[in-house]
Length: 347
Ligand SMILES: Cc1ncc(COP(=O)(O)O)c(C=O)c1O
Image (cartoon, rainbow, N blue to C red; front, side, top):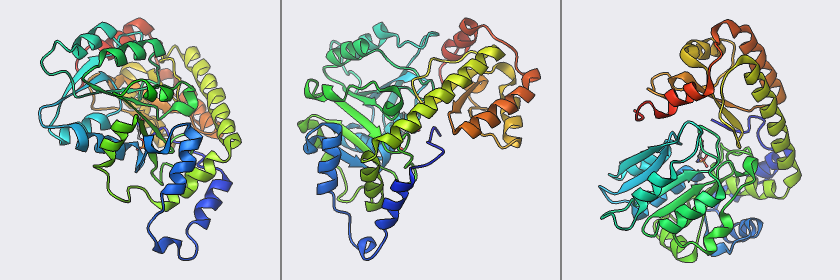
């Protein structure tokens, strides 16, 4: 699930262990100092940062706050499924706009759906940037055009993979009152098990969301881990560098197999293995290699999302794929992505 499979640094582990000592587990978490430190780290006022139990919890919070039955969520597709999960639980409808075969957002169509002349513009639009599962980025200029056009729609830019892409719109919350940005400690920071996410937004939007939050949304061990992790940017940088190097190696290997893949700005690669994808996934699993695949999905059934793990894990994956070369047929990228991305609506 795109985690940092090496986990957090030993210093972070020790900080979490320290937070379990003495009477600390017996008291409710204290947020004020942690929020101030995190806000300084992210360069925003503390009032514009919300702590959530992972981004997932932040998505539910947005739905609890804003989504009424019948409201529309506008989404590119394919994208991370939890956006629509919480939206549908709240009784909302989803409109999907498929990425084109070059993994670009059909901007004209998105702007048309956001146009204020429409009776009921979408309640919210989510752009995961980089996107999951494709790993692709939406150019900043396009994001700006979207934010300016979404005068009656909340735009969430989900930057769960920011540490790998380095591209952010976080500073834009000062200009755009309709923008919310999410980050997480689950990915590059290696703290997925502890659950800590953040939402950033202008003061008014942040205050509105806070009204729907429980008093203690995140636990003190998650805070201890996150605070230690931001104190050691060197460990994070080393992890990111290792991932970028291993991603490059994997891409060169996929090139040699003739397997098309999307240009990734994240710690995973979305690749099209064609008709034999389900069999390849099964065989990889028997060798102890788990990749994300969608055996029951109309369009994505031919694809894998391959997480970038440690150097040893990547060697194991490449060796296993070498052994399965006979099942892998080289494909024309245009044709492959045309089939995957444009063939049909998601199921
Ligand atoms: C784009 C995106 N957003 C959010 C999440 C969930 O993050 P968290 O662990 O903070 O709930 C994921 C996890 O896969 C993701 O891919």
